[in-house]
Length: 333
Image 1 (cartoon, rainbow, N blue to C red):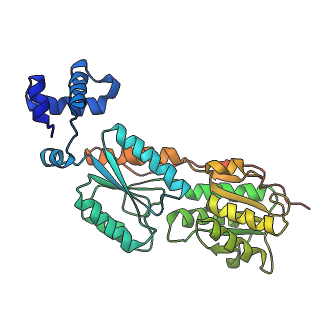
Image 2: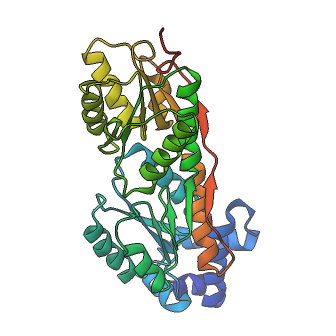
Image 3: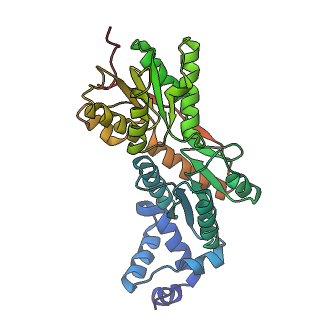
């Protein structure tokens, strides 16, 4: 087995010289010094593979972050995680991602598993407003950053979801809609709760009612969008416009309209949230509120890097943007 000592002997230098050179070369990339690149190339030729466990005993750092998401199959969280991983890798850190399926008990189990592997910090994309898992981690002094969702007492990188809800409501009001339904994600997720809050407040300022039966708390996936839309359309006062707090749910809503022979943007307007890549490519392109998903991932990783190096860091709420496409149109008179 080739060790740092093996490489050092071959190079005729002290083992600490090789260790420092390899760390610098990994962090500096193409800008590394010629000597550091020379030692890195020698190590590669000899088949040297770093031992992270040995390194963590020396530096008290594992150079790894744990990442928790509800489901990595979710397009939004996949985009965020991709940016987290790329940013962490550039800084010399590995990332280990785990799916919690939004189950608090599973989240707790996986957190302890990751901490047992001595990760240097956590990026958490599955925080909930209805339990104190995050508060307990903060009390323990664990370095962590919430991403996409937020809860009080922990640093977070999110979209300004209240402002995003306001954008969606203003757009529908400007198109003349006054009977509006909402297909929301679970309100224990700050993303759903705050988007609905911003949406409702904007309607109230315009003196437009949002009856309780017009807010369907269903979920973030396509099936949830179908359930919520069917319930809204089967109600006594079907809405002329629907706000889905997630693009996948909006796509489910469009499926119901198609099945019922209704035309999006003509018979019923639909607006989603996030602007996932497929939104612009649908047969009827989806109006939505764009969340800066890649930037969220980058900023989350940068924030955790700052925390683990004892640098100042604070929560960030990034600005959303309205993207009007063909699924929303002026109310037909």
